[in-house]
Structure formats: C-alpha cells, structure tokens
Length: 220
Image 1 (cartoon, one colour):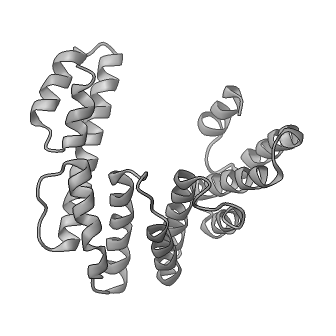
Image 2 (cartoon, one colour):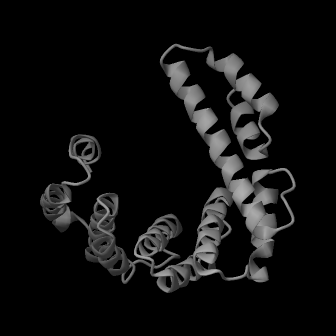
C-alpha cells in the first residue's frame, strides 16, 4: 500500500469517517486486483475493512468482515495475521457482551498458537481470557496454567503470583509498564531530550523483564 494512502487512512481521516476510508480502500484494492491472488486480495480487503470498522466502534460490522477474512485465511498460512484477527474478534464480541462467542474465538486462537508466536502474544490472549472469566464469573481452566509458565520462561519475567488470574494481571501490567517506558525513552531521545545510551543503560539495570533487558543490551 502506498505510503501516502497509509498516512491518509491512519493519520488524516478520523476513525469515525470509516465510509471514506473504505471507499479509498476499495479504489486501491480494485487497482491492484489484477496483480494479486484472488484469495489474498479477499483476505486483505476484509481484514482492512474489519480494522477500520473496529477502530470506529462498529463492532458488529467489524465482526462480519473479520470472520469473512478467516473463511479464506488458514492459521498455518499467516500465523501472525490469524492471531491479530482472532484477537480483534474477541475484543469486538466483548464490546457486544457476547462472551460465549468471544470465548470461542479465544479457544480458537489458543489452539492455533505456534512455537513462532511471541510470549507477549500468548500473554495478550491470556489477558483476554481473564477478562472473559471475570465478565462471566467462570473459574480458570487449569489446562492454561502451562501457558503462564511458558510466558514467564520465554520472556524472562520474575516468578509470578500463584493465583493464575492475579499472575496474568501482574504480568500484563508489568509488560505494559516497561513497554511504555522503553517507547518513551526512544521518543525522548529522538526529540533530543535525553542521551539514549545512558538512558538505555539505566533501563537495562532496572527492568525486571529479561526480554526487554536483552533487547536494550543489544543496542548498547
């Protein structure tokens, strides 16, 4: 997709003007249709429609397009995109308070996780799971306990709390906190407010998450 179109869609046009965004998408997809595989075009079109409708809070419409995209998209073909779409479907159904459907998509997403998925992607799904459990007053299914430990081991988190819901919440909060801190460092350095090297060094010395420490140390 041309950079100019990306900027227009994501920066210039407000989320509420989704009709305009979809019209521009249609023009673009129609122009590239002869060059793309029919199924690939179908997936791209409906995934993008779904995103802009999700962004506009048009949950039911977003679901329609996301689910249509998944009629052609197999998890094995593009695990990352499949993960993103299923996560968006969970969120849309949460907003509609259709927790049964949200749980179905959570279970589908979990079944289609691969060794290539990052620990933070697994954690994001577990966080959604806890939200669904709390909305429906359901107990934690112990079959997901090994996933918590896998996240801890792969991302280098400190030992979590024993209670699974509390563990997932604390891990998610820790991940968000240190992700935001790192993003702010890069932004402040770009603006010339701080010395990046010294700030990254201090970050690495205090961050409790191994993945972030390794990421930063590679840049020192």
